[in-house]
Image (cartoon, rainbow, N blue to C red):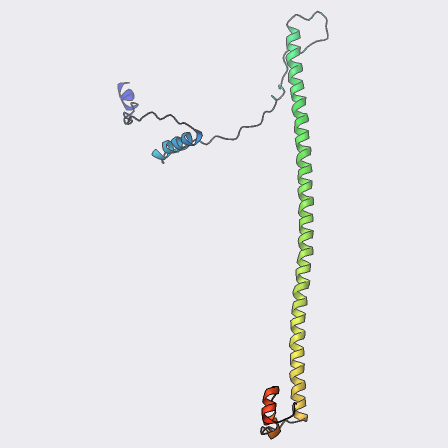
Length: 195
């Protein structure tokens, strides 16, 4: 007996260091203190609260023990039993109505999402088609320009084959062209009439 008691004794906890009391003045300081406390021991698991479950009425009992009879002369306590049963039934009906309304709203939301998705896809397809048309138009214009350029080069080559161009020496300027001066004062000096 003594050996089992000795083995179940825990080792003593390490002493905590005394800390100064800090009173947070605002929410930011409070959050800072909480974070500092968490970061002092990063190996310690952090409790993350789970999502609160939605309230649901208690399921109906498997076996009803006190069934209300139709005989007269019910006692004074039966009214309170009836009242609780009625309240529970009203809660159950309200819950069922609320769940039906929620399901209806969810279904409407999903339909609206689907409609919006289809409309967005149609709009995207329309814009994609427009972009594709513009791309094809640019590509066609570029192709036509290249063909036009090739045709002009082929025509030029064909013309040069028909009418070969012989290089000629530059002609010397006329002596009359040399004396032609465009300014009126220079023509007076040279004794020429205005051209």
